[in-house]
Amino acid sequence: MKAMKESHSKSQYKLQILQEKKAPKTAKELALIKRAQRITEIAYDVATKAMKVGMTEQMIANIIVAVMKENGATELAFSPIVAFGKNTAHIHHDVGNTKLKDGDMVMIDIGAGYKGYCSDMTRTFVFCLPAQAGNASKAQEKMWNTVKKAKDASIEALRKGERRTWVIDSIARKIIERAYGKKAFAHSLGHGVGTVIHEWPSFSPRSTDLVPPNTVMTVEPGIYKKGFGGVRLEDMVLVKKNGIEILTKTPEKLSL
Image 1 (cartoon, rainbow, N blue to C red):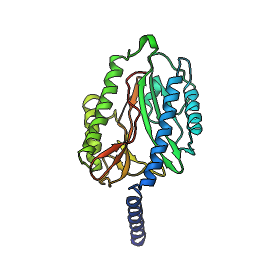
Image 2: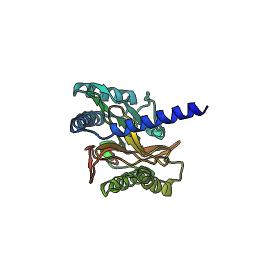
Image 3: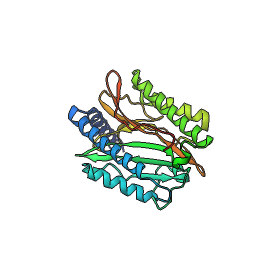
Image 4: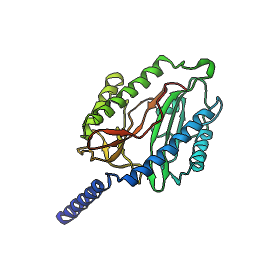
């Protein structure tokens, strides 16, 4: 039994060393990640401009995949998540045939792959017909603004030099918990991105890691309320020795 424990400990140590070595990205790797992200943003832009009342989640997901391929994606980082209305309360919603309605919350979580490297982005907004533009409900607006505040606060801490993963997570988590309680934000704040969509390290209450320089991280707080809906906003951030670079260029908008 002791020998088995020692073997497991050595394996964990080797894995940790490998993860820490892999996390910092070279200039070439960063260029590939940035290209993947640009493809992702093009797909998001085309899909959201095509949205109309009555379209299904699957229809929008199909547009996203097609546009990614048309613009050079060599693979998908993961299957698109497209959720309408109450479905946005599901953290990892399975795309289905739910039809879009005026006033629906819409969550789109997507990522292209380019030559073996991934991107990851989430935007949530309220879909409003042109005549009703901007007419999000007070409850939708409060939830969206709370998530935006949480994301911005964590990114600002990274900008100022905070590198403790659990601290970055706690900054966003406290903002959300004060407004919606502890159960509203039921996942970690973010993760590394590279050759796979989830790399070490992670922004988590259970993490004890520091983010190494030149690591690409997601920052993606969320609030999820069954029977109502949810909001998640996600940016990819390059954490440098001094400062950061936000790789996600698509602006967040409360309503589209």
